[in-house]
Image (tube, rainbow, N blue to C red; front, side, top):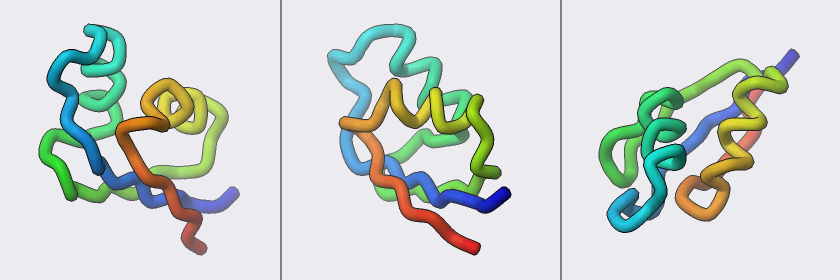
Length: 60
């Protein structure tokens, strides 16, 4: 199982409450902040919910 880097690239202003909660669950608070997570179905599902607000890249 690999790892992914998730970077917040857009603001959560005027987004639904669920999208804001997903960003918080991923550990993203500020624009430009990057976090690393395991490549699990749970994390990929959360990333898919906010794919228009984040950028994702795979790491080793």
